[in-house]
Image (cartoon, rainbow, N blue to C red; front, side, top):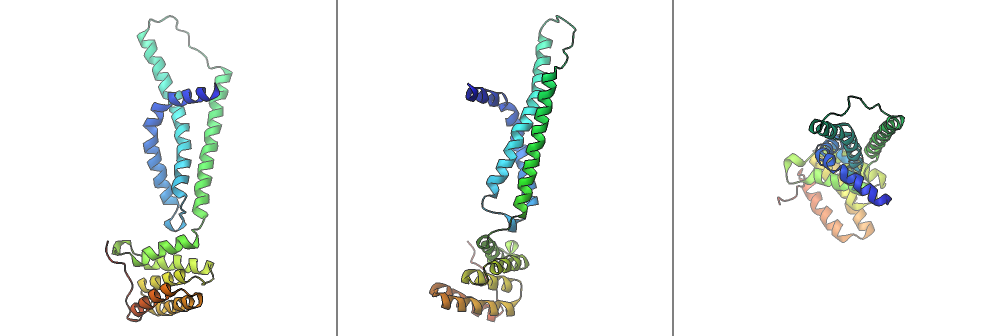
Length: 227
């Protein structure tokens, strides 16, 4: 049966997969994190990185099995048996074709992996995801995790893509300005957030932004309490 045959082949590669998967997964994750800045990471990124990593894992495991394990097993058998003939088997045309076929398949997988990673790098975050990251960078209780300049860029991008019509996003931009030391901008933006809250009937956001506005008027950024 084709399914059972496929399972048997995967089983034959299991030791190679065991040896290769962890270092290769770690390498791909490091490369993926390096290629894709945090502001461009979508919620599906971890799954995507694992997906494009496991394809080469199977491919390299196949090469490892064919080029190292099987020859080593053959050498072990020859050493344990009495020699019968000194003739060397010549590679057949079908064997050469199979090897070239797997090389072509490997090149395709690597090209696909690179294309997916580059596409992920060029895909911007949604406005909501940019807003969440900007808020964390502006208000995190840990100073080492804050970056006002980067928070401003993310929050400005989120507001521009929503035409400055979402109260929560505009409020985040005000907090980012305050963290970056741009208190005049923070005050003006917080006032805009309050006006939007009034327009949209968002009483909770209005109260929250009024509290934050007082901080910015006193030239103080807002930081969340330590957890």
